[in-house]
Length: 451
Image (cartoon, rainbow, N blue to C red; front, side):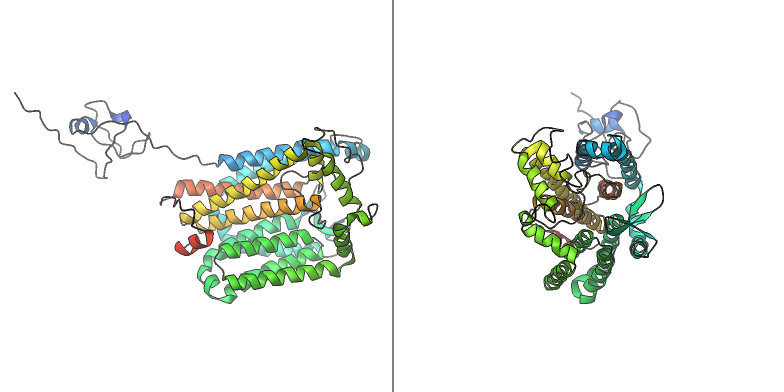
């Protein structure tokens, strides 16, 4: 009996895995490409490989999706909820003020279309662009924040000078300035990572810039935006590995200064007193908060149904903007509010998860950017919901993606586009496996992996 011949396997110059692509399994066919376009495994003479004892397998490698579907789904759900609620809450006041009950919802729909386009454009821009231009964005933000305070330049609405008027539209600088300053701080954290962890000035210098920008916001006045900017900046510095003692001292000092500023102005003091006991003056300083509490309490477990709110009928001021959450709670009840809060929590957690993956893959700028966006969105949502519930003093802050307002939804959509870009670059540049260690904190990951 003849002994079976032993086939010799000829490998390509690159090491070949112990599996071959089914595309090249035709005996006698020699592939000429180095990499197979179907499964990205090295190619070689398949007929000789089979005789050599290797078994053909189907390709299991697929390119990962370049868009994080969970972030995108939550974002689209929130803006859809916002569009529906703006229509429900504004139909009465729009008809009274303009004669068109769809006035506000049509404007909001146009802004949503622009926001979706902005998300796509931002998603296409490499993170390196934002990293290189972070300093320019920071300087531009401070110049514009200062320019708003110049008499005749800033546009005043309800006693606050926060906008620049361009005729066709008004632009609220503080909304985009918060995001641009986060971009700057993310770049600073990777440029001065060692200095931040070992030198006090490495921590103080960026926080002085944040404090100066926050001071300009307070002068507008926009106390809520200033508080969110400082807290987000402190959170990023903490994740960047700053000494815990320095962080504690600066946080304590920040809270003390903000507390003094809150009681130094008569109108802020009146907001605090109405927050402490809104029922003491329910028809004056406490009117807005009491109406908000009535709306939330009227919702019960499952609400009055879409369009069934009573408080939106000229009882609750700013029902379609800052206090839209109260109308939502009235119409959808406790079940609806829990669903909305869970959406924000999932969005924030997903931003942090993307940031952690990027950090473990040595993409520090994208990681801090995702952390900053997660902090920004969740803090603003917490502040707005807290104000509507009477847990925080009134601050004039929108609910991200839901409240009526072009500047807010555009700036937050820009932030979502940045996080999607972080995920995309992580997927296409990852070169080390994800470390699945639940004990690994962000601060430990930062120390273990150099930017």
